[in-house]
View: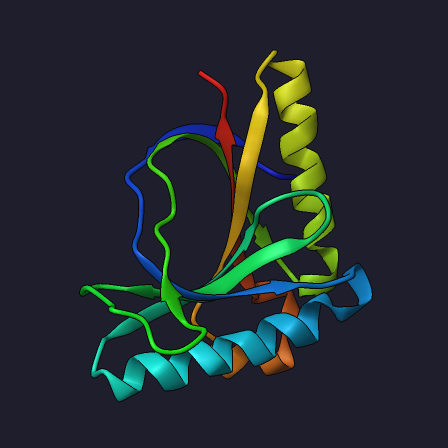
Length: 151
């Protein structure tokens, strides 16, 4: 797949998240379980949720996994508020199975190297709202990937 990497100003986004650590093989299951935990908490507070987000805090796979929220979230147990940062980002969109998301991350790193830009942590993936069509055609699954850029 060819990736169109571009720079944009990210406005920030409030999230409700849980903190997790996972190895690459565990990642999919950890993210699914964590999203379920967060949805349960925000529904209990009648907070409207948006898309799922996985925030990679470092290379060790310390994560914040959760949901975009459109109202203040006070937290509930292990589910806490945590905003995505504001700033300049390199971003691209991946269409296809989640197992191939590494290709999109690599594309951003190659773009940064070619354009003399330095990616910073955190980076994050925002997952499109699931539609039934994706069950039949996983090539249409949408995930947006973002990396903060050093000024």
